[in-house]
Amino acid sequence: MSIIISVGIFLAVLFVLILVHEWGHYIVAKLTGMRVDEFGIGFPPKLFSFRKGETEYTLNALPVGGFVKIYGENPDELEVDNGGGANDRSRAFGARPKWAQILVLLAGVTMNMVLAWLLLIVILLTGIQSTVEEGQQGADAMLVISDVMVGSPADGVLPPRSEVVSVMAGNKRLDNLIPSAFSDFIVENADVEIVITYIFKNENSTAILTPHTGVLSDSSSRPAIGVALALVELKHYSVLEAISQASLQTVAITKAITVGLGGLIKGVITGTADYSQVSGPIGIVSYVGDAVAIGFTALLYFMAIISINLAVINLLPVPALDGGRIIFVVIEAIIRRPLNPVWAGRVNLVGFASLMLLMLLVTVHDVLRLW
Image (cartoon, rainbow, N blue to C red):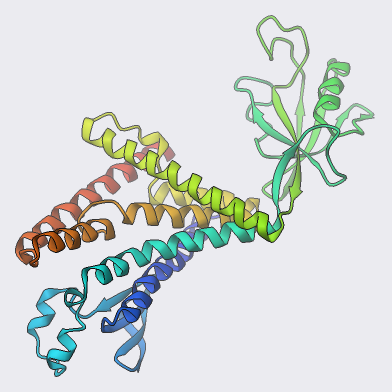
């Protein structure tokens, strides 16, 4: 898949996820009595707009998500006479109860988590590939290469996650495509070339290999080509099973991302960060093509993971993110007065600069890794 298509798909996924995030802010702001001045799809320049009630809905030229403009988020807006008087000022973001402000700030990440959960439910209802033991497989089970040993005959020839379609040795064909029969077939035909037809990224390919001894271990006399095999079949879940499993997976993915992100931040501070375990925009784009090639289900799973990533990142206690803004609201609730806007602006600037620096470091390592 071309890089242009991969970038396009990634931007489309990001567009949907950011739009869902902003819709969460929008709907809760409305429900808690705040005045929403604008809900924008994309970013300016403006292409089209219409007004319904007090809110202007805009379609903009840059398709990179969306935004919500809530009256009073910027304290400077309160100094402008918009003709609404005290009634409008009472509906400003900062004038609403602190619990309402926190709910609005939490709504975006909540929608990202809900979207990821719903996507996982759809995936499970559609069916996911699951490994099964020999003797327990159904008629539609596939023989899949789960791993390839480095330095083995299969290294660089057979890609992991490919489906074995047929195995030939001269005029002999392996009729029973299961791991044990595959291994025995290699041993029995170690003196001839093995021709393996496989499917990878929806394309049929053929590999020709010669079995070697010493592949499994230095002292092993058993001929092998150096692949790990698994039987995989499509497993479908009932609605209740899908809801339960999706909930467990959402929690597990969130925990893994949180731990990984925490480790990265700690590593950046101490100078011991392992950037090989994280990816920025460039690295993520490189995964899009693989996800699309595997199938629509893989793309949905990719989308769910990115959605959870956005939620976790936005909850970081960093100024300029939702998590940092929540901390500001909590501080205001404790001291019972608004924070100094000049001080808050400077802290936000430092937080934003720190985020950009972290993103730059990750992106540089993405480029070096791909280079």
